[in-house]
Image (cartoon, rainbow, N blue to C red; front, side, top):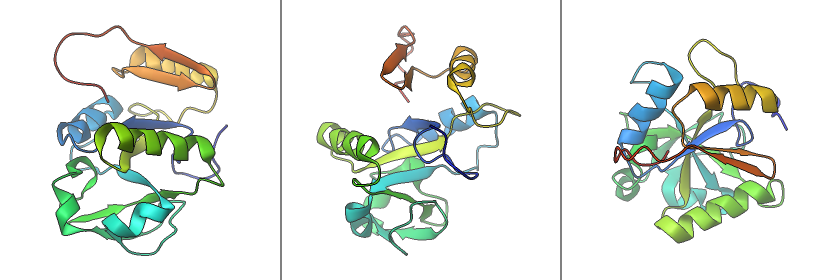
Amino acid sequence: RSEFGPRALGHRSLLAHPGRASNLERLNDVKGREQFRPVAPMVLAERAAELFDGPVPSRYMLFTHDVAEHWRERIPAVVHVDGTARIQTVDGGDNPLLARMLGIFEQLTGLPVVVNTSLNTAGRPMVDDPRDALECFGSAPVDLLALGPFVVRRPAMGDGAGAL
């Protein structure tokens, strides 16, 4: 289901590991945009104040937050050059699927944050339906597409680049 507005809020998103600084470059390559362009951290609303200083909740990525100093090296892919991030908070009551994903990601990695940016490629709008998503997946070097209850995986390339 599409979100309303200009931001990818988890339903039409490219998601990645925030602990790998190289994921920022990789996402910007996939999207065909300048390397200085930032991506957003997605975090559970109840965890946001531990990592970010700024208005909470921030469901729609409207505010820039200072990233806590001790988190900057742990989540480099989402920290802007000035030590800030434009965060998206997720409320488990409003979005149980994203909240569950964030919880599982933290169990696996120790990081309560996932990189979030819009699912689109250079010069194209955000995907808006399953056909758009499949076309984007077919033309962009991403590893996996979750589409409703279905998961489409690209065969491993063996280049050691790691998954987004």
